[in-house]
Amino acid sequence: MAYPYTTSTPKRLAADILASPKTHGPFAQVEKRGLRFYHPGLGRFINRDPAGYLGGNNIFAFVGNNPCCRVDLLGLTDTEYYDVGGPYYQLALKLGPDEWGTASAVLTYRLLTGNISTKKEADSSCSDCYRRVVTYKRDVEFYADKLKIRLPNWTAYSSASADEKKAWDSMIAALTAHEQHHIDIYKEFNAVVNLQGVGSDCLYSKAKQAAWEAFKKKLDDEFKKREDENEKKQKQYDADTNHGANEGVVLPQV
Image (cartoon, rainbow, N blue to C red; front, side, top):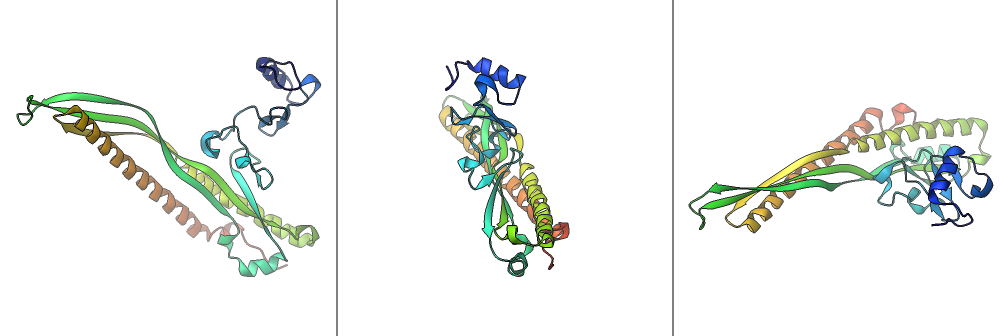
């Protein structure tokens, strides 16, 4: 396949990028943007999101395809800004320290490799004198998806005094670190666990269905347990830091 504006093959294009990440010559349309390379001719990044599937199922997307309102400086967490107006010290009287920013994620799972095994056990109650015992085993990956941080953008920043800007910048730096720690707690949800369910019946189809239902119940219970543990850690972190105030997420009157 020839790329727009070049006669390069994908292999030649990749070799040129690795040789010199700066744009030049016939490959000037390839731009190095942080941790990824962008190809204007294709209208997309040509390498995957370094965060993998943590940013969503489309691993070639960028900040949810909304670059006008979101940023991702490290290529790992989607950051969205919302505007706040007026003098910052007036806002401070209205907003508590827990309301300046938020961190969010969708806790979910996907089924990985697995197998089904069957054995027979003697049982006089079955017409053919034995019962089928089915064991359903599967690896399950629990992970935090759609990681996002939401931070304030002070619209009056450019007209603020040097002291006000310094106070705002200090608060934003502390807030960003605080919300990133929440993201790190969400990532603690990530794990691969092997679960299994066992079912038995004279009929193989019923034994298999029972094994799946037993597996699904264990899966639901495991997910709920991990979800509750993560929520408990999030609340404990906010309690320990007073929602970040003890870490500097506060605006002093200047």
